[in-house]
Length: 490
Image (cartoon, rainbow, N blue to C red; front, side, top):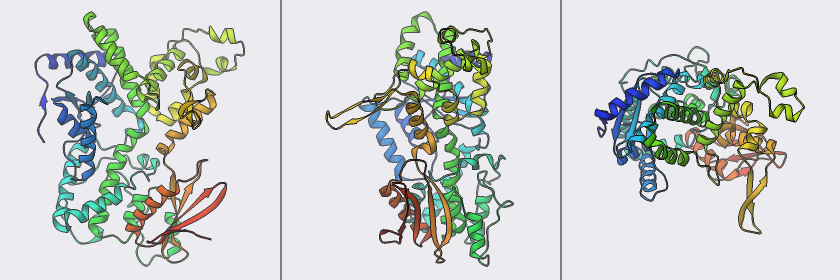
């Protein structure tokens, strides 16, 4: 797809101007390549996760249709796309106003700095643009060889499991991928496994070699017990064909590539918004552009009636941290102060705010960010609350403004993205080669309907009964899907 064009003329001069401001403020990023395209192209790119070339699949068309209609009917608008690669690619909408492009460029430089310096992105493949294109070619070959419908249906099954990941894998192997551009299609299972082992995510060849068929089942259970990387487990131990194992490996690596972006949505957008606001209001804005900037910025920062706006929470928390560390509102003395008037007027000229927010963006993800810096004072100033549906009035109404309740609910939504944490308990349950999973209960009962759908798809890969242990109403329960129906195991 070549429907984009490089910056020229005034936009190229603007890019250089904003780049200079970003560098002066201390932002550090890989080279950023800006390209301009129309809205239809932006929708295509956004539907593909920001990449020009992806493997063929119906979900990309569905997402394109939603994005296109969202713009057509005024529900949403995409101003830019930025990709975590080296160089970093950013796509600008050709219909943006001049002040919009100025804001977007500053926003992109903020994202690029975050991608390069945040620890959770350290192991992501910065050459993913090429990897995506090569993998797309490879999957198309599988479709030609084994049939389009068969391969696409298998992809459907694997994609339903892409949230069953282990975030710790991101820190296990920080090295450059050495996958060749083209891998010959062979029939040996070992070739697919080695292809996976050479990928930058999940190289376990030295630490946890694949157990052969003569390995005792109790040794297999010992190796896999507690595994939360379900896709890796199925790729290694499920009775799948070579091409299926390779597809699981491909989709797993893509899932881990996008995982840090899901883990840092509030921080990433808050950081980029902080810098576009700082650069424009302090450096780049002309007096004639102030109202237009205020209009677009306020639209992006508007809080939804139903959901947390990551842009708003992120930028306000960054500003709050900077203010607190500039005025000394941190540390033991401040925390232990019991005089409310003294605490309200607390001021020590420490001027550590800028240094602190750079340090925060380096090491935190959304959960640790909220847990450490979401304070009661911040919650009250932002006028946050929780709500629930009142069947008597037929409306959503304020449930509570209690700080601890609000913070706990927000952290619960962020923990594993609101999805249950599932781990492997046994690969030889009941000594019959069945798979037993365990739901790590964290106060919220498992949605049995969704769990059933997941077990059905795992069964399609494992090809033997799949069971799960969970807690329902404070009582441990086990459910089994045998390929036909789900039943409770007594």
